[in-house]
Image 1 (cartoon, rainbow, N blue to C red):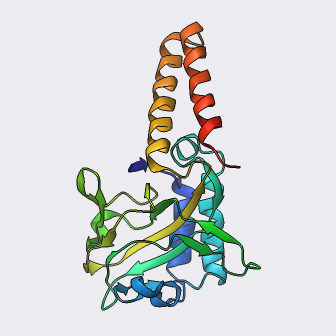
Image 2 (cartoon, rainbow, N blue to C red; image 1 turned 45 degrees about the vertical axis):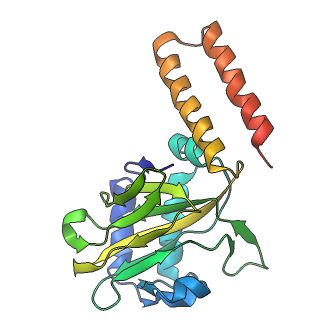
Length: 228
């Protein structure tokens, strides 16, 4: 399930993030890659413990807090703290890979997050760089994603994906993983579709008897499938 969350970062937060990126120190991205991914990862990242990364991390986490579309799609239990990367020049692509299933939170005492849902928050406008599409192998074939600055895309952590070479400019993004209350992507998709239908029904009919019954079905399915 691929879900776009438009304007996750509003104009003020996005401007702050871009100002931080303009003066940020970069290091090679292989430092945080797994064994397989390290062979195909050619980008730069901000050190997770650095001041610039931490400030951008806070902007993204604040935007996610209580966001209804994010909660409905991801059903978050834990969120791996966002990291920041750049694709440009010689470090301009990331070959096909699958994200590590379990991530250790940097600076923690071994805290682990299961990567059920992957997410990218775009921090550069599409016209500022050529190439750099996030290409995700979905059940319906390849999906090519290149969104406006401030937009987020969510997709299953089980997906094979890559970032196409950037041939002009710089692709800047924050990325993170979510451990969901519901591990199965198929079950999350059903719950998301049901939740969206409920929202539309409430807009048309309010909380009538049928809407209340359907809401009960949603929560009973979540109760059946969720792990807390």
